[in-house]
Image (cartoon, rainbow, N blue to C red; front, side, top):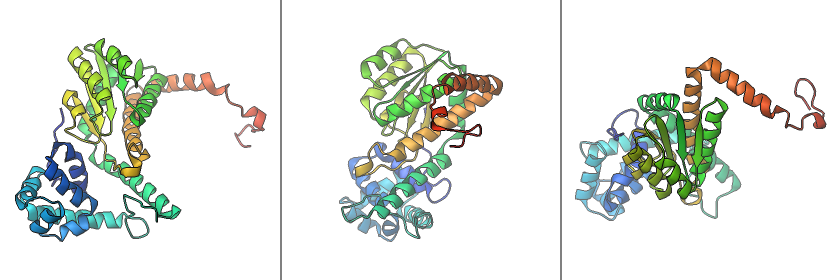
Length: 309
């Protein structure tokens, strides 16, 4: 089972990813501190410990405890990391500024475009930067050796589960995806050693995903969690944890940023699995491509031999 690493590792931008990932493990007052610094790291970096405590409506002792809990020796070290993260965010902003995570009624269409593209791009970049390659390789090895793979996801994550199932089918893997709790629980209870169960949930707290993964774990299957929050309930029954780094907001809960990050992890796993037996995977992909090519309407649209209309 994965454990969150120290917040001080890596580049300064790590602190924001680590803070978002740590939210489920924080007490309510500590979460208020986290939300203040995540929403505006630049301003927070200039606050005294008393000022930050006031902004978060909590005590100085809570802020100090929060700093230590997320991996720093004290509040001064956290301020330095926040300043570095703010500078990096500014450099990566759109048109010289970082677009706001939240958009009000005064936002223009251009503001919306800039905000969506920026935050989805950052989700991909940060997911790639923080994906633990050892855990990813363990997942690839487990799926490659599995006699059966069951993938659980609800809502937006269910679409990602379906996508992964389809990809695995195309290279000849026996895989199923489940997005209804009764069917998911039934399938999970029948799994055993040699099978793999994958739970996909941005929050890691979706009961209809957590429960079947727990059942699969108890049944003896190797379990994999794909979630944005290390330490969330989904990870408790996971042998392998793969974390994304998407930022969801009020109007983009279950947004394309979280799905994009999840799909990136799924694609990484798929390509790595396919490459383990490249000849067989290439042959399977060719067969499945040929099986549906005849269903296209290209000929009736006047497409030439080079595929041009």
